[in-house]
Amino acid sequence: MDFGTESNSIYHRDPGIKDMRNFRLYCILLALLAPSLCLARDVAVITDKANPSTTVSRTDLLKLLRAGTAKWPDGKKVTVYLSNPGSEDGKLLLEKTYKMTPGELKSFAAAQKGNIVILDSDELVVKAVSENPGAIGVVNVYSINSAVKVLRVDGKLPFEQGYLLHAN
Image (tube, rainbow, N blue to C red; front, side, top):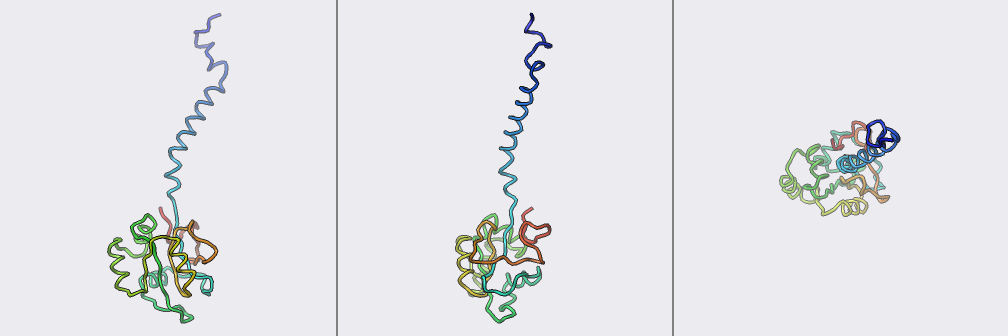
């Protein structure tokens, strides 16, 4: 009996071992690629629970975010709360709506005299929006809690095809 020949090798007798090696290779590749797949994200436009609005058009959202609209249709003052414009989510918002650098947005917000407020975290934005009737904010979808509601943009929610604030 010759165990050294190709025809008698372990790979020919048990093809499952070769399949297992391929499976391990696929698992390693998946583990290496998974973090980049998780970078796909959306940010959401939120408002206080009492706000009767459930949807906003892209055009109206841009006016709200740029302090071009001072009041909601029901007369409540609009205050915009944003988190760090230098974060990945902040950069997404800047790219999709403001078309400014983080520094330019900070200067712009300061000139709006309280109509646009930049806070240190999404959690603070959610808290501020929930406590201020008429407020809106923009946060990562995973920061949303039951204290606020998400506004549809052009009828779409985060993660839906065609949503304005979706990261590519």
